Length: 61
Image (cartoon, rainbow, N blue to C red):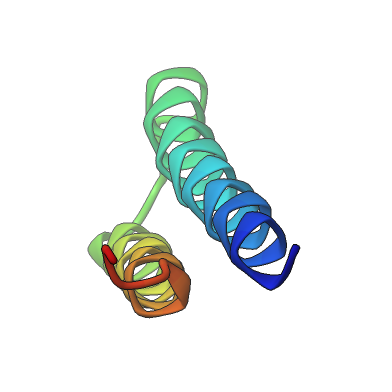
């Protein structure tokens, strides 16, 4: 049961990372004044959530 919970939580974090990257890409296409700082912050947040997802994945038995 605990293993399944960790898998679902890590899937959620992976989805959040994908959504953040999508928001950054669409925002840069729509708005011409997207700064490099905004893109870097979005990418850093996505990397942090991806790392959280990987760390929450249970080890193979």
